Length: 392
Image (cartoon, rainbow, N blue to C red):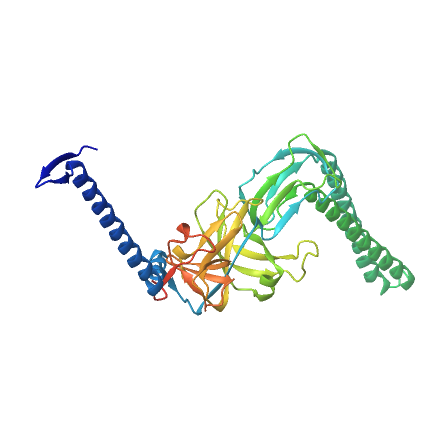
């Protein structure tokens, strides 16, 4: 530190250099900064301890605003979805009715319509034809014998009055005539039986309908043990055999409207339930509802189809389609509980319209259901619900 000394009136004076002024200014600046920081810290402490409301308001503002509705309940057609197989409503297996033989011709193909009694296939009848001719000849012999016996009886009746023959002779001729008549009846019966047997050699359609399958070829030897040669659908009528759960089957009645969609097709076919199974499979707890359908080439027996069965009305919640979500576990919706926390609720769908979905089970209509934006929410997330109108 530099000091200058001088003498004024015999006194010594100490003169400070410029370094002391700089130090004083720095001390003043530091003190001022510390004071400002202390004031700011005190202000912040007072604000936090005296007014906590802004932080709570900020947390509330961070919850997403989501539109919800309380759907209530509406009267809608009660619909049940089901799957099943297509089949002929009345399937007719056609086989050998007679003694059989070698097939000489098959006259129809699968997919053809036939009338009742139409010949489907012919069987060789060369031996049977000769037998029929022999029996026809025996009929002619029996007719001749009867004619002769009747003529002799007529002559005897004319002579008995003149006394040329006795009454006993007349009685014998009556017996001869009656025996000849009986033999004629036997011959006619035998000939008719042979004709019937010959007719049964041909394979004929038992009723008008559609040929479904053919399992016989020319040259094949057939008999009563050959089994089914053709399968037919009587009248071409088809049906779907829908498999339904036990609780759905109990509520179903014949006459219910049905919409059937075969697999691989977008065409819907209208039908109606004509029979509800009186028994339930004890293993699957399911039963069969038989749905009558009009013939269409797209309805192939043995194929798979889905169906929507409308049976009566029910009071159920209805939601916009945007409210219903689905994943590998099934269909579900998001609801907001009393604390406005999102919860998942599994549902079973009923009738699906163009703009709404009936909920068959899972909701009672009093819940606050998220209308949309469900894909962006997670269970347990807090939301700010905005109540909308049902149907919006």
